[in-house]
Length: 475
Image 1 (cartoon, rainbow, N blue to C red):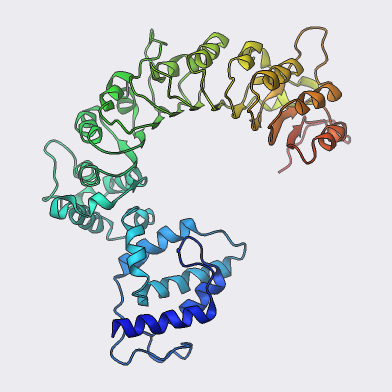
Image 2: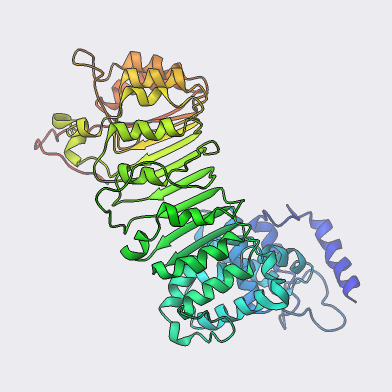
């Protein structure tokens, strides 16, 4: 009977020729039509095929439907009409409830990302979390071995920490650990083949056990988020180096926003991991401090993404790029300049303390993507040096940056010369020139010259109101 129903549905699908059978993309029209095939709803008159002769299709659990729908929503394109998007979700949910032929495909995708349904609040979250980890641990982690993505693990742990009293943790309680963190350790141990792991923790005492578990996994990407200062202080390069046995780890993200920086901290690279990508959010950490988290062996390092604050040193910036000459992507952000630095009468104020030296633009021969924000980073000579020494550059982002003179006699923003410097880039596809000290009309010739070659964006400096002489902010 299953075979009969399968071919009945398949024949209908062949007649209507749906857009896709891979479940990576399904148009709203196709989903609306598939949803009309639901046969389990008593009294439904929208079915284009007769209901099965014997019984009705077995409906999978609501939790399974929620997980499937949560995953597929992330893969779907966005439609402007919110009502149509809501209708699409409803129809797809109903399809998941009745379509047996969909479930084998859905199940394979489901186990890759088991935590999607936990993103929204639920009264039974603790019970569901316990059931999930027990299911993944069953039969020597049989199902856990199918999981490939634990990107939401930190978020779920955060929410479980607030409801610890409702967690029944007899099956996975770790001695000396909280119930919520025991659940997190259980998930990491059960899903040893997960490639992407996002961890949160609140105590330095939690790290040794956690890192021993992670070191034996197949993870390729790891994100660590401490909840407080003491936990952040425990994330030293020496502690992180204990992850060296995780041979596949190539992408590391650190959240150092709650860091207490001790005086006399070393600025030399100390991390003994062979990383390809390093990302650090350190809104309280200066560049001088962040340097110690660079890998001692930068042979494999290709991407660096930093958010830094505090004191800035040109020497430390040069030390960074000299240590990692093979970078293809470099992103470094600070808080933007004060508003007055973007005004006509005080343009670039404070830029001398955040100046990017000329030499910086000669040390990145393999660079393809450069983002600097909140620096005095641009001038005619700097742009020309970048075009000469980084021929592969395709993406240039200087949002919130200001322009400076190369020397006392040079012009601040010679539009014609800057146009020629931009045209000298061989592969430049996108360029944002930050806050420029000229009007939009003055930039028109430059934009016209780059049309069809480079997408050019900029922000004009603020000018005083012609009526009152004050500066206004427009949203």
